[in-house]
Length: 361
Figure (tube, rainbow, N blue to C red):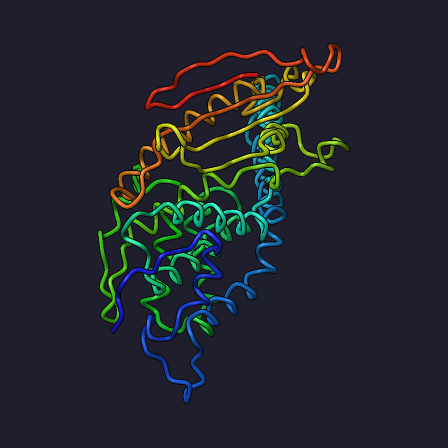
């Protein structure tokens, strides 16, 4: 039995690293029973999920439209007073419940793998075992597929897809259950508690190999938090104004975020997360609708930075002492075409709690 961690070199991502490891790092399997090596199982599972990954945005939108129709019919049928009925219908329209999700498909999954790999490159000890890497990669592939049934509680719906699609490649039910649990706690709440990772046991021994469930879940959860850059935006939809009003701010946010980079400060040697946004001044002054209220993109960036800071603190509870992300630095570049290029930026610095910084240029 081999149950030792293997360093993820900076020249490789997590998928490449998985295939570079020999069979000795995984539980035994029988080729006579047509069982495949674990890296091949992951590849087959990934291929099988691809059509579903390509459908998640459509599925969420259809579900939202159906729910909107049901609520509309309910108000029309049940509210007798004309003025009250109109008021409720107006509020329903303003809530814009048809969600036009930003990219939750294969591109997003690849980005999560990229960001998790970035974190693993900085591990000083406690490196993942290949068996842990297999479980983590399968959970990353699984974590958002529940959106095809609708956005609400999509974390829990991943179970349905996992059971339907994974059995031919991951026949062991204990492995499937572990993958499900890792995917389940990447967001949402359990009995109203958003501290979902704490519901996992610290470690699990599976086929004589230790699986650090909380560590893997934290890597997935924070990797998902970091995978929200410009690759997730529907650029054409924004340009053609086909993105629904209540969802435009999410796509505009993603489009503005062109850099999400984990790096070590050469002076302080602290590991920092660097976020860089850039957009036109006309976008900066535009009011977007979010949850029925007007909101500027700058306010959305500030709120999302605070959320990311909370997620950083939360996930670091489960990653230390192997890896410690010490803070977040944010740069915002607002371009103004009415002035000369060398004078088109202004700067402001604000300290956020927890050693993070917010820069506005």
